[in-house]
Image 1 (cartoon, rainbow, N blue to C red):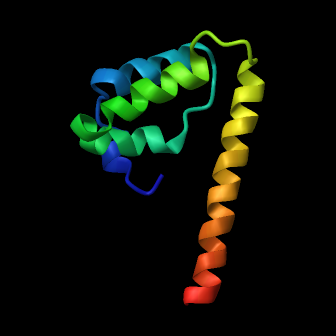
Image 2 (cartoon, rainbow, N blue to C red; image 1 turned 60 degrees about the vertical axis):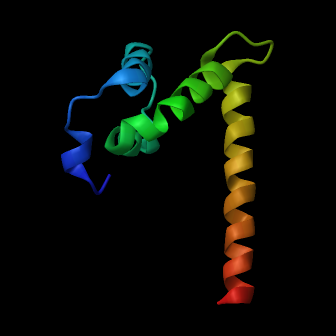
Length: 88
């Protein structure tokens, strides 16, 4: 991450819980969680939502949920890139 001063600050609130859970499970820490630490009051609801959807009880395996999330991100990026080509 390019904002080391944010990444090295102690986490608080839901971001701390999410980081602790991910690190405890040996999982990779998404870079966006470090960015969420910059404005915790504005992003705690996003962390709670993500934790529930991605790691809460579900009939879908964690791997399948990650795959669905990655596909959604990929589609969003593709639309953004397409808009840049025609608007730019």
